[in-house]
Structures are given as C-alpha cells and as structure tokens.
Length: 312
Image 1 (cartoon, rainbow, N blue to C red):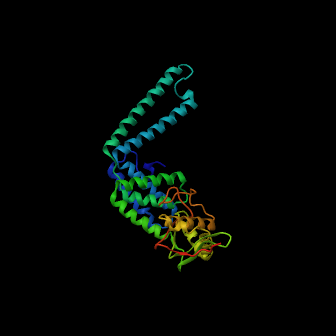
Image 2 (image 1 turned 60 degrees about the horizontal axis):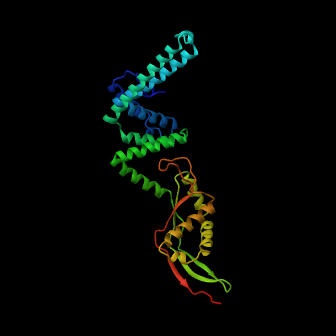
C-alpha cells in the first residue's frame, strides 16, 4: 500500500483533497479512540506518514518519482522476461541498452533536481501528530527492530527541530523514569565492612546507607519491577554480604559514592541474573532497549564510621 492508498486518494488529488482525506481518516483511526487496537494504531501511523509526505510539494514530487522508478523497473523486468512483447534484443542489443540507460539517466537527473528542491524548501509536517504516531508505532507488536530504530531516529530529529516538543518530551521521560524506579530499602542498611581477624587484620568500618533506588531499563520494566518487589529481602541480604567483603577505604575516597553504586549494581544484577549492557528491542524511550537494573540512586549520602582493628 502506497501513500495515496493510505489516504484513499488518487495520485492526481489536489492538496485540498489530500488535506480533507487526512483529517477525515485520522479522526476515524486515531489511536486514542481505539485504545489497545494494534491494527488501528498501525493504520494511524500510515495515515500520518502519508500525509507528511504528500502535503509537502517537494517530498510529494520525490515520492512520485520513486513510484515512477518502481514502475519503470517493473516494465524493464517484464520486457526482459518477454522479449517478443517489446523490442528485439537479439537483433539490436546495443540500441536496447542505450535506450534503457537513457531513461535511467533521466530519472537520476530528475531525482537530483527534486532532492535539491526539497532541501531548499524544507518540509511541512505536523510534528505533534507524528510524535503520537511514533509512540503508537512502538506499541505495535508487528513492528520490526529495524522499523523501531527508524522511528526512534525520527523522534530524535523531531525533538531537535521543535523545542516545545522537547520540553514536553523531557517531562514524559522523567515520568517514565519515575515509573521504572524502585525503592529497595524500607529501612537504613547497616553493614560491618572489612575484615578483622587475628590472622588477617585490616580496616573495619560500619557503613550506613539511608536509601537506595533502583532504575530498571525500559524493556519489560513492569515485570522486572514486580520480580524485584517479590525478592526484595533476598536482594538486600546478598547486597549486605557483598558490601561486607569490601575494603572500607574504597568508600572513604572522593569517588566512594560512585564505588558504592557500582557494588550495588553488580550485586543486584548478579542476584537477578540480568545484564544491563545487553541490547534488547528498542522502546519509545531507549534504542536499543535495556533490561535489568541500569542505575542505582542514593538519595542521601551514606555514612562510614571507622572501627578499631585487631592487632597481632
């Protein structure tokens, strides 16, 4: 289905007809009026994309040229398959090749001219409608990973071109990150860090962490958050055991908080069996997507109290 089919108009339709068709169809197939219907969401995305191309004179001309190229290619293939229906290739092959090359050259020249016009005149689009379409495109289970990455790239381009959309998108991203966060500690975590034995004396300290919030990746985030909630106590116990083996001097350095965050991430990822660096299918907020705990947030600074060490 090409863009004209998507808008249910003729290739010769005027801009007024195209605009009217778009308004009528987008009202009928708007995803907000059909929540959860993937077919409607896909149709709305196709309608928005078609209108974005056909409402701009330069882009429409370029698109028409691409249709003509496809038609010409099909005709050439047909002639190759059925030589008797056209010219006699065996009789005069140089002239046949010259004719084909001439038409291809004309098409390339026309494509270059139209591309220049598009570059100079710019594009007429409805960015908010396109952004809505992109978001619903990610919700479709039929979209391939390549298509999702193209949608994500288009989203970034839209946000860069329209500062008003960027502000609202930043608010949406903050809201999404809040929804993907989990407060791991209900009470402060107090751990005795370091080793203190007669055979291996070393620095010992009491580490108190007031709070830890985990941020999970955008892929399958809700299921992972539910899993973390069910295994909260085990995750805390394994984290405490991991911290107890650390050298307390590492937390006393200027980068002590960064080290603590790394320990938390390593411990929780190992407990969950996830790899936050592995690539997953793209989402509206990340491309590629991520699964697992991708960040640890410490809302308050931790406290480290040095304890006396045993001496031989």
